[in-house]
Every structure is written in structure tokens, then in C-alpha cells.
Length: 341
Ligand SMILES: *[C@@H]1O[C@H](CO)[C@@H](O)[C@H](O)[C@H]1NC(C)=O
Image (cartoon, rainbow, N blue to C red):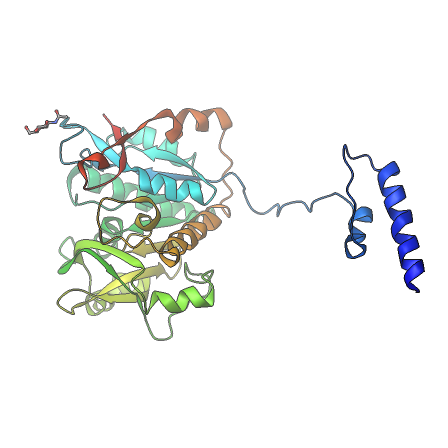
């Protein structure tokens, strides 16, 4: 085609583009953009097998999360707002699972969510432990019954499910990993496919093992030898990564379940983007990307759930019915917490 012919077609197209367009405005396009005029303005239907309004239940932890600065009530429990933001940033909403609530209420709330998150903390016994144990059993039951129902167990959450699965409350060991950033050592031949690390772009995946993008804050943990030496734990979990503590003792840092959509983190993926009270929390762009990729995995798993909760019942129980309190003004601890009394 001659240049004149191209220009002629260009002008004709603009002419018809202007006068036949039903848009409230029209634009002048370059020849390379002309195909846009004739392309249909329809979007492909989303995958009908996925649920695009997923909700995650987060279990509250005893206390006020602020060493009594916010509440001394004996029945008080809290959720650090960083876990809520972590979930929300990846496109899901949150229902708080308040651990002091009667079992019937907690079971009803579990029917409103598409996955569960166990937070960090320190409590390892009493009603809190019992509640976590009951919810964990329910997560396995739901999956056994064919409802895809993911669980993210962070720090204490991972420690608790290790105690529950092994049926040994003394399975944990002490480590020196308080308030420190670390890298992750990938286990040789770790099966990344379908795990939390699968979606990481290769550059970031590589940096996880060379840079300090991971926030650790724990006194307890489990060594690979102890995990693999326990039949129940070894058959439930596959170890993906380990870390070294300050004394060079190796602990398990990320696990996935072999048969369930359950992921355990000894570290804190939620802190990088949302907590500011501890100087050692990494906030580099790569650290923030790490938070985001981990959150995206959790929510992408929840989208596979077949549960479609009743809208009004869900709205009545969403975290939006509660207000977070700013407690980072003290210059330490969590920045914001939701308190339940
Ligand atoms: C909780 O108790 C401590 C110690 O007695 C006190 O310093 C603090 O102000 C109390 N917190 C509240 C919210 O009343």
C-alpha cells in the first residue's frame, strides 16, 4: 500500500471513528492504534470455578497486644491490624474469629469464610489453644469433605499446629531469633510447584536466599531433625525452607502440608509492609514485594473455596464492624490492633 493510501485509510477511519462512535468522547489514534476502533469492548468472563469475594477468618489472641496499655480486661483479645491489611491488600475481606466466643458462634463464623489465618503471639495453652485446635481440626475436615479451605499459620500459629499434629506439647525447641531480619535457605529439591513460592518471580525468589527480606521474632521453633524425626509431623509437612538463629542453630522456617492447603511460616510475612515499631523489620521494595506475593498466594488459595456465604450474615461479622486502635505511638510493638472485649 502506498503512503497516500495509508493516510487515506487513516483519515477515513478517523472520520467514521468520530461520527459513528457511541462514546461520549472520541480520540485521534495513530495508525498503529487503529485496530482499537474495531475491537469489541467486551471482557472475558471470570473463571467460574473461582470465587472472587473471598473472606479470611483471623483468630484473635489473648491480651491487648500492647502490654496492658490499651486494656487489662481478662477476657480481652486482639488481632494486630497488620494481618488484616495483609489479607485486604490481596483482595479479600476479614472476619475476626474471637477465640473467647462460644463454639457454636465460631463454627457459624467458619461457614462465612474461605480460609483461616493463625497469627503470631505467645499463648500455648488454655482456651486459646483449645480454640485453635478445634479450628484446625475443622479446616482438615472441610478439606476432607471436598471444600478447598486454606490455612496460613504464622509464627505461633505454626508452632501450635506442630504441637497439635504431633500430639506432643513439648515438641518445640528454643531458638534465639527475636526481632531480626533473615534470609531463607531453600531445602534441596524443595517442591515449589503449587507452594507459596511458586508465584515469586525468579529474581525475587533468588533474593530470598541471599538478602534479609524476612522478619523473624520468636523464642521457639522446631529443628528439621525434630520435625522429620516425628512420624506425624513428617507425614503431614514438607519442609520448604530453614533459617539459622543467632547461635547458628537451624530451624524450620516454611512448611507446606503434603495433603492439605496448609502453609506454616515461622516468620512474619505481614510485617514488612505494615509494621513500623521495630527497626529490624525490612522495608525495602523487595521486602514489600515479599509481603505482597505471600498475601497473593493466601487469597488465591481462598478463591478456590466453594463456600458462598449469605451476604448479610457476612456483613454483620466483617472486621469493618470494629475499629483498630493506634498503639504504635508508644514507639514499640504493633502499630494498630483490633481489641475484642
Ligand atoms: C493496666 O495496668 C497497668 C499496670 O497496673 C497500668 O499501668 C495500665 O495503665 C493499665 N491499662 C489500662 C488501659 O488501664
